[in-house]
Image (cartoon, rainbow, N blue to C red; front, side):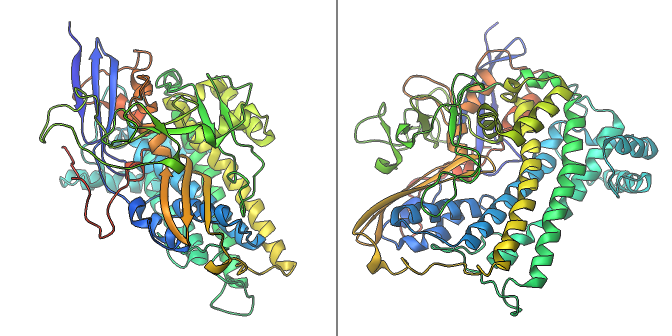
Length: 573
């Protein structure tokens, strides 16, 4: 029997536009192509701009990944100018980024990914009393009562009876790949709804420090907020108490709701620890990014795990990064087989695909708007699992303790974090590590203030007259989805080149000149054993792709100075 061709477009419950094309044979995926069909962006409009303004513009790359782009941009400029910042400002940035990551992971699990594992229609058959008893075995949480579970079940039942499935429309409910009993489904459904309120509460931390959310305010040289215990318009004693409460509530929800739910669900789907393995090469740049000017190194070092060897960490060298366009709709002066380091990056679009509407893109050598970053010639998987495994490889104490304890409980090995279940599990474990770190960072921030270090801005290099004529810098950080980097070149006080290499560019890249699959593609077709029971309801594919938490808006970005598109945005449905 000839392989069957399948197209899933669009992949839903992600940011941006992603199309997956597959070949299947006897219920298994034999080939895969990840096609980013969205074409938009930011980088070109930065050329000729003041580098101090770049952070505000790059935040608009995405409506989800906002602050991380701002911080990566600011770090790049501060690296270029060798611009030190006050300790309080760095602590504020760390708190904002950590809370953003925890919020992102919780939203991803409950609102983007959980419905791949949780059957909402099954939850409507659950016994609330049994659900409460199940919840009591997992954690002590005040809303885990029979009365609350009954209210949730009845509310959703009433909506369904009225023909309004609302946010739960178009699911593959009843698919044979769902495994959870009704009570576990109802527990997850109740926490799905509760997480909506929780995330809105805790992210107010970014509003207190950044003035608004999304797109909070930042500042090259520090932070735009002031600290003054006697001023109501600044960070003061009242706001410190509010911030402490948000940090505590974030940690409590992670430890008593998110992680227990995740572990309970994982116990029913342990076969997915052997499904969806992607590139065996993993990359992370450490807790706080690299120690460029103004950025702490963190306690986890940057590093590379090569060929899945989690017992050995290789050093990270940014000079080994290159972006390829073999499969993407761009041109390089030196041809499609060449790779370019971001400081020599070019983003010149040339669409050569079929005229829409089209049947398939994978019949063509170029099939995506996403470039293909490679490290030392290898596709790299980035994200929470890469961070945990690079930390594990360097024997980071807190990571090793949490990871080994959890994996022993599930009967898994560290290498199995490179899987569909592993990527999902890694987000929850990382959330606990980050939530604990936030508590420590907040305590250190309060101590910094107590010691009288209340400055949040260093004016020393603010004026362009103090800058060198030529400078270049890079800002690295670990965003929720993986390693993020912004690259800037400055001439005569203006930006002359700006490039972003983002997590979803690494993970959703297409084939390179060597024919190597990108990580999404590898996860689906790398060994030819990924299951797909029903091509009309490709639930297994969604599980694996969602485990990466795709953000295609971040993965491609290009427009001209007046906002006119340099190419045509095409969304195929």
